[in-house]
Length: 141
Image 1 (cartoon, rainbow, N blue to C red):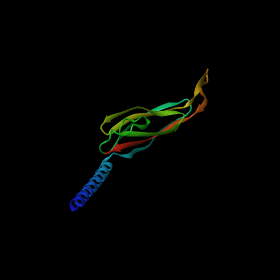
Image 2 (image 1 turned 180 degrees about the horizontal axis):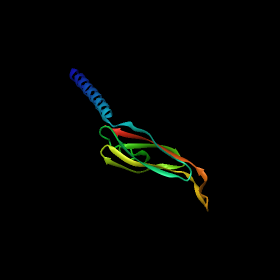
Image 3 (image 1 turned 90 degrees about the horizontal axis):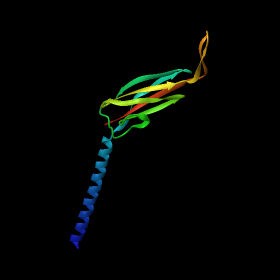
């Protein structure tokens, strides 16, 4: 009977050790997973009615980018774009140019229609402005 209790006790401590070890391993894995960091704040463009504009952007993350995460807002894996604005606006041509650098264009198109008046020139009818603001995040290891 003493042997049975010892075997049960031994099994209990081995199981407890495995659970504790797996918990520590999980904590280590979570600590080394990529973290989301803002690397560019409010890259912006604004236009008036009947105007269109784009601006090329290049942003580099510090450290190594974890490409198993991200991709929101049209960004390549490893990055997220948080896009805000009004009117026709957005981000296009996003691509990585190095392991930790992303390039893209932000754009905005103002509403309205151009009317040409002979001898006077052009005029924008029903003008509405537009803007785009982008925050860029990277998942770094």
